[in-house]
Image 1 (cartoon, rainbow, N blue to C red):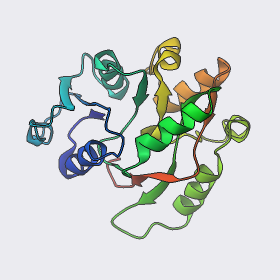
Image 2: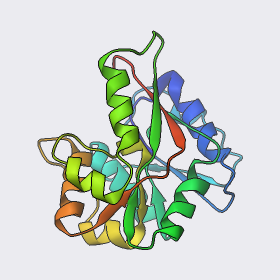
Image 3: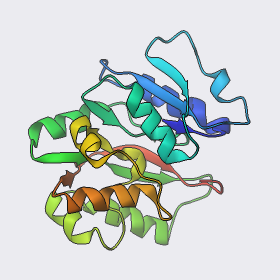
Image 4: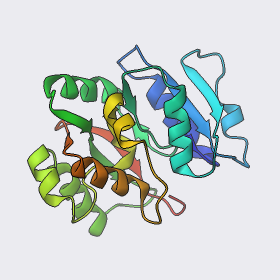
Length: 203
C-alpha cells in the first residue's frame, strides 16, 4: 500500500486489509515522504503490518519498494483511500488458483463518494465490472485500463518479469497492464465486487 499523506482515509484502508478473511498475509505500508501524521497513527501492535519508507519518490517507486520487502508468492495492490471487502484476497487468490493461465487478477468495484455517484462514473463502473474474462480485457484494453489499479493482484513471478511498475509520463498502472498484454500475460477478474473505490477531489 503506497501512501503519501493518507489523511482521514488511511486507517479504514489499512483496517480493511488487516480484517481480511484470508489470514496468511502481511500488509506493507510504504510511506512516500508523507507530511501528515496518518502513517504514524497506524496501530503498531499488529505484527502483520509493516511500515517502510519508500526508497524513491512517487507511487511507482513506493510500490516497488513494498515488493522488495514482501515475502509472498502473490502480491496485492491497495490504495490508501479505498476499502477492500473482507473476502477480497481470498476471492482473488482462489481465482488465480482456478485459472492457472491468468497472471494478473483484478476485481469488480463499487465507486463511492461523499455525494451521489451517477452519470459517467456509473457507466464507467458498469464497463469495468463487465470486463472480466481475459478475452474481453484484451479486446478492450485500448479503450481504458480494465483493471482498477487498487484491485490488482499479481503472481509475483509475473510482476518480477515485468520489472514492477515503471514511472512513465502517463498512468503507471495502464503502462504496466499494456506491457503485460504485450508479453502475452492474461488478466481476469472474479464476478464479485471486492473493493469500494473512493472518488474524491485529491484522488
